[in-house]
Image (cartoon, rainbow, N blue to C red; front, side, top):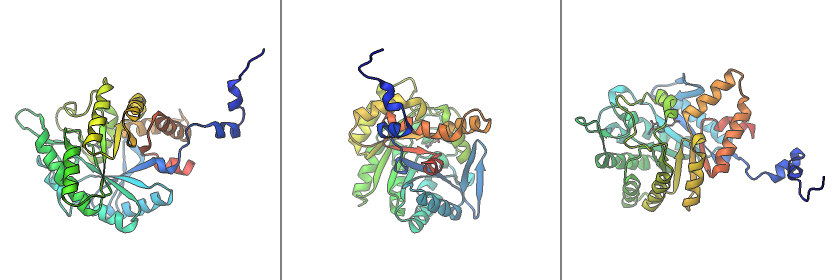
Length: 325
Ligand code: PBG
């Protein structure tokens, strides 16, 4: 048979496949979520995230040193606060001595070069487990009041030394409000990574276990996006870029590769993607049963997310992936 071109030529050996690879992962692609809790010497495994842990501050610092050693340059910080500190204003969120603020300082002290991206949303502080302030009568999440609270929260993170604020709440106008507050208060070097296209997804279940932050009533569909929608994601990303975001995120990742690509094509700033807790749990569970090869699943899924257009990936597999690479 005569063929002018044989596609398999570029797949024939590992060396050829390596030089022909269009997408190559490096530890610079990863951000690692860290879950911080009260106490000392405290390391608790999250039951729905086998192999992933909540840690007290002292243990978090040790962990962040290890993360840095592996070549990972950014962490996403989340806190689990005591029920006693939760209310419907979220005011603990901007307590200058709160757990998040302490964590930012402790990590900066220990590993100054590590990029700290803080979660900005009220759910860990909300007695109702919602990302914003609840209108008690209607159950609706109040937008503008919440943005005001998020602004105080974001400023307190900047004050503590955060490198990026990462609002994950999906209120309207919060990127512009945060940017304005940062400028007005002299935090001109602090970036914003917006969770721009964040879908109302069942894949966040294990994360809500990790932070004890599941909504006490209803769901998050009046602020997080309907997963049926694609153009809405482009709209969200473009608006957040215009309001002053430095990076826009798509979340979750694996079931949203088309969205990552759409957003990548639409914006002129870096795009990140979040391989969320449920995606981690699915891979872990299948691997524990011996149904898939865990290491291969990690690298294949992360390569696919990068190929789709993600410049940065938040992933619970960051350490594993860095070790495999
Ligand atoms: C909350 C927040 C969530 C995640 C990140 N920030 C959960 C939610 O919106 O309910 C999910 C991350 C994950 O599942 O890994 N603002």
